[in-house]
Length: 624
Image (cartoon, rainbow, N blue to C red; front, side, top):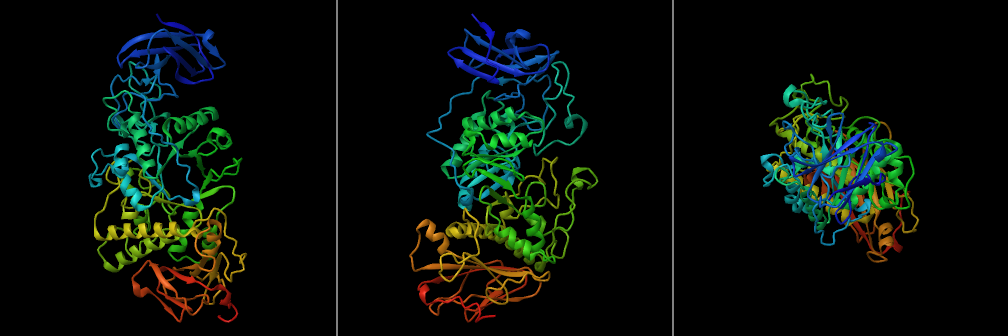
């Protein structure tokens, strides 16, 4: 026999509170709400009219006991319209992307199936040791070139886990992967009518919301991103398994979440739920500042990565907040293509590393050109969006290297490859946490479209290029990430001070032009040498020998002419060795351990081992 009484309004959604006891709480401004419970997807099992006696404030709540509802499903009804719960853990009839089912009922599971986590926990990797990699779950493996079994799904990401680990990735950032409303399913739903929502593209030909920055049921993984949602009421297994398998590879999972007018309570509840139920490691939030402030100081989330765009609010005692550094992209791109008066901004942004919050640096993202397109197009080409090319960012700070779009001209292709390598070197050797937009490492292109928000086709799907150039670029990215990880001085927690605080003859970071130790940042300068001393990281990690350390000299020349950069004096027993170069071996050379000759639009990394520091003088006055 079913017993019904007033429930706990503080626990929103549907929760099992004991053996055959379930609490339901729903916020609504109506005078009455009806709770509908189904045995499966079709048969109505129970109908509960929630009037004022079940209401606390604007929350209707009830407790149902006396019968096992573990496999049951539910939704609510108001004024004749069936409405899903904003706290729904799963949602039916959403298993096909961009498809609206006739007479659909958007029901949710009351209780999820048990999942064996095998002792899994969030990894809590420090920002300074992280390499982020951003992807759209569907677009990352939907193309036939991805060569995975279940394309466009969470399982597809599992099949790419070994590749991500080999690349050196430590965190995958997922664009919205919860049940967002790309097809206009949920707004104004009536059981006897079809949706009258914002994006009825199936019938009207209007744009779908492919990216997912729109209305959503934030607590449920996106059913169409799974390979099993069409035949399983609880399809959450696949997302959980993805998290568990990525964690086994040492890769964190960051969820990107977009909120518009949701309450701070819902936002905090949502993030807590994903952390506790799905073991995610962090969230990249778009939402009202008041809600971000609550999340930042929530003790449950004190070790969860919380990332947002420009954060100037409260911070916890743990460095778990991060700023999505939008300004980095423009500075790097302008310096990359050789614009005037960019060197000083470049130096400052390379060294930017706040003490109380991390920064996430990127040169490409979902709302702009891919890296390949950034060096292939001067202008956006968004005609496929059917908005007369009016949408998307017009100021991209890109350069096509002499030809707009695809070409077979060898000189243009060689320059583009070099420019992409230059950009990646700047990204990987900046302080802060680098983020790679998935596919950039093997030359994915969107054909000049910098805003494919409404495209679910080969333009927005990642093309897993398998040619000689793409393989060469992938290996180059692996090399950069490996080099960054090897030297702690390149990814310190604290900002480098440009000071010789250890009295070893070398500061932690220093800048060099045509004269050693002299930083020249005139408006016409487009080249600089940046040197790091590993002794400042070794002393904090107890690595290396007390009388031995390395100098890392990174040279950037974004001018269209060759230049010479001075190398600081080192002992006669040491020598400068080129480790990485964005061009061929002949593009850089060293004379007498004192001068670096570097070709136009080229970047290079040199190292030197210093052994007996007592016999070394900086000699900055000797060499000009």
